[in-house]
Picture 1 (spheres, rainbow, N blue to C red):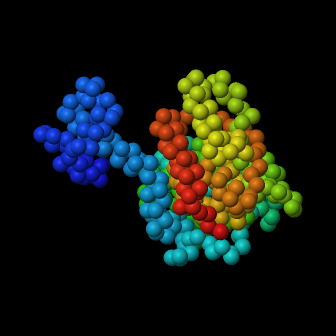
Picture 2 (cartoon, rainbow, N blue to C red):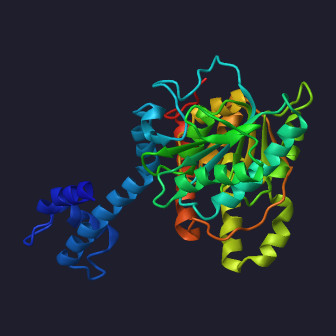
Picture 3 (tube, one colour):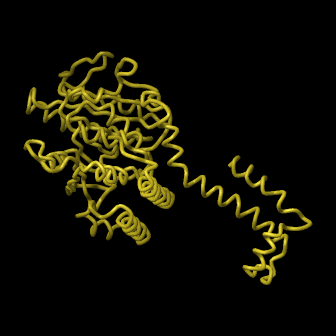
Length: 374
């Protein structure tokens, strides 16, 4: 806004009360504005309105680019305000050469999720502890909750799940370096970011911090059952060699007709328009890009998210674009899904910002302003 006001003020001398510049006279004559009855005062008012509006539009379009420049100017650790675990300076992100320490990392981005997160974590720990008990020494895990600068008690709610897990396990837990009691088969790690930077950035932090052989992104609302992880694992050939897919996207496409029957017509119209727009700009190889349940092989997930530029709702689209640039294949897997109340996405403003971000992804990669990190 200050830039817009300054730019508008710079134009002010051109719009005096006595006369308009000759260029405006020519424009008025050529366009027929003068013949339409527009006075010099009307043209002056038009200039005062049009210039700030164009500048504000340009500033709005540049937000994702400026956000990326701001975030990338500092190391990842500088964006982390607090962690539930200990790590030496410079060691929060494991080096690329280091082999995975665990079987699975579950990354949960969370923003103002103090009420929905606990149930999701309880279900996740119950399932993962069961797998760890069934395969002692062969399955280990961690759950990484990234609090994206929440204004509520999301961080405390995440830690509270440890107490419930301890009670449920009958005391069969281990203590970590900070003294927290952890599940016997895995570990909960909670990070709080210094400010809200968007779901994409929160997932990026979790992916880069993760120590698992496979990296699962799962939404905090628990809309997709954690048990569907097994479907994604089969798609990646987690227990088979030579799989052609390195990424598995959970998909709700098979639920499309049922969902459309339950949603209001305007929501369906916006959703259809969004899918057509995505297909036109980035192709239609993936039917459901926005389902928050995705599994990556560790080296693939880290490479993609190290190159991520879009940090808000459209980051999934950039993941598709980056996977194509890297030559990674995406398997789309049907998953169970339940619409959960309490979504943070505003349908109108969210759709506009997502469309803007998709266009920027297309333009900035096509012009090589953004490039993947090989």
